[in-house]
Image (cartoon, rainbow, N blue to C red):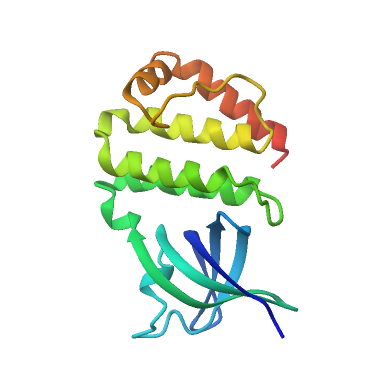
Length: 189
């Protein structure tokens, strides 16, 4: 008998496979980053489709089989894609999602990644657009630090994306962008 994992997750990407199936890149706080197959999700009227859209936060049921993970159920909790105000903001979210999917190897179970992504999306949805560049830089820096690809100090504030912290990031943005580029280069990808 296969074990079912009930967990919360956020869809970082959705890759088409076959005529009606998709492979979902899902970041969860419990299992980590998983590539899970969702059958029939691209069919018209598919029950799981709203919960498995890009940047959808959901509660899902994952089953681990001999061929990998499958999603057998999902309920939409929050649709971050629709909350992001502009194309540029969505592009920022896509770059960070892509960074996580690219840098996390295997099923990374670091519990810090999920809250970083959720806080990042909340900040993009609620804070003014002039601070979005700083939000993206800070999110990328935190992800690299969690994955061990940056050894510098990451400014800490509560909340994770406070206005004083974002002003500091904007003031020293060139230095932080160089650190991000060095961290990505250090990953070898």
